[in-house]
Image 1 (cartoon, helix red, strand yellow):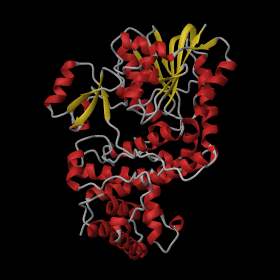
Image 2 (image 1 turned 45 degrees about the vertical axis):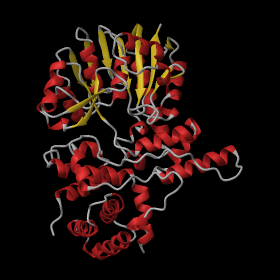
Image 3 (image 1 turned 90 degrees about the vertical axis):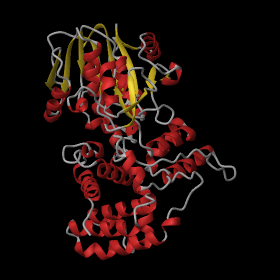
Image 4 (image 1 turned 60 degrees about the horizontal axis):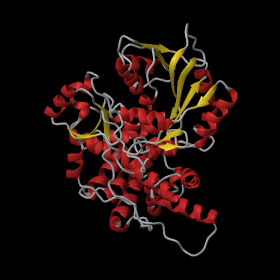
Length: 487
């Protein structure tokens, strides 16, 4: 029996994520895989994203039936086991023998022949107890098993085809405990049940409370909607004619959410007329406002730059990108004549004149984007946050030097962590007394008056002076925005 193209693709993608720090969404939509049949691409997406989302839970089940410590297994062997375990536990109509056999064949394909009997034995044991393989905790967060027919239907969507079961039950209480013990118990339950690192969930319980932490974890384990920005009625009509079903944006009026159909297989997507962009990301760009000279400090992949160009057709816009290959992609995505794309680090950049508006959408941990990028939660370490903070502060302070008197700087991350958000802004304002913090709510009211904001209650999008979206509480990734005005 040959190995299906979907399983081969999933196996190879997961290995590249391990070896190259690549991102699943980028690989799945790369030229190497985007031409797969919709059914194969849908199954490959399901396997990759499911194995990443539920990795710690899968590892726990593998441990139950393995005589070897999984920490000592070759990554090729462990990856094949995770793929097999995911299919056996979560995919209802994938025949158990196919999941086991093809996982064994993947190990052989990876030239790990000696491990084939071991993989076969572990997965056969797991298959025989698949109906009770997962010991359900009070939250019952384990998703319903899905059929191949469901995968083929969902394969037309460009979001990760993933797992669809809410976990909304209250955490159970077992006797009187101290607040710190209560937080630790809540974090441990959430981390185990929703397959997140304990250190990360512990932080969220401390910062947001157990209810919001649960909402974040639950959101991360579901396939997020595919959002695009569409303001041209003719373009909308053309997409509908090609079978793309669109729903209104839930935060922004010009946004649309893909209900069915493959947007990436349309001519409009191939030509760059439409791009996929989370609604929270779109909102960040809108908060920058308007000006005659605009600087985007960390511009790639270019979605925010594109909105800046669309909203400011008469402005001179400079888009900086540090990495040459990303600079080339940025030039392709944002080809407007009034946008100058430069391969440069803002910390070494100098311009002949200052800018009315500056966007510093800085590199960050990405903990607000785990629904789209589940590999981040297994890659990130606690010590990374301090390293990122130093880099973010240096970028923000350099960006502040580019702002004209009376101008505005928007600092943003897709992180939920205070080290990357409030703490960076606080340190920057102490060092640069000519700036003061603006109110994000005022800008949201402006967007509402301009017809851009569909969200009914701006107060639910702000935390103090800052804009903050929280996955699960808001229908988008987690973003933080601070507006800094220069006096």
